Image (cartoon, rainbow, N blue to C red; front, side, top):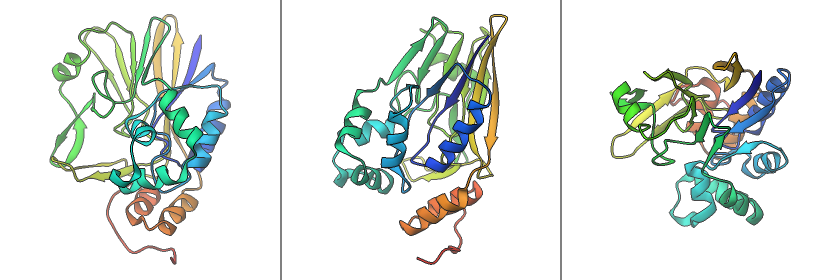
Length: 254
């Protein structure tokens, strides 16, 4: 039997990451697979990268890791700008050097968004301003050249397991660090998980079959929300406390 912890989208939330690590270590996992977007956000980007760089985990680069490793802070959004200004040069180099995808054994293919692009959504489409599960034909079209039993992706922050018609599984473990957010892009949308719990997945192989289980973990989200408030990010504060995106008055004095 093999057992992996699957984590993704930490976004600098070190308290959440530490609580998730404590949880999966209790399972006695054989390895950890980290699907990217490690640091972007108004929390603890430098400390989170120090933590990740000290771990012997399988780790790939997400779309915001790519941006942090390449871009100038002047053209970034507020979450990326904060992280860019608060991480070290060797950490940017590490983000640049880790791979954008991995093949783990002949059976598992690992990427952040989709095989086509790290900022693409493999499983979701936007309906009514929300990210919802997409059509199976469209999902399979993005994978039609690939032959793996398990595909691991992140990016959406939404925990999902989709079984393709050939029996393959697509697993998104959800987000360790941020349970709600809004994007004001060409087609605006929001993602809301509805609770502040950190999320990850355990992937087990038994009798040649892979089976995921999803974990929701309590952590000190008050401390994370207070840090976001101190950095002037009411949107993150609300999301960290509630798992929703509705704004309200901050309970923390600034």
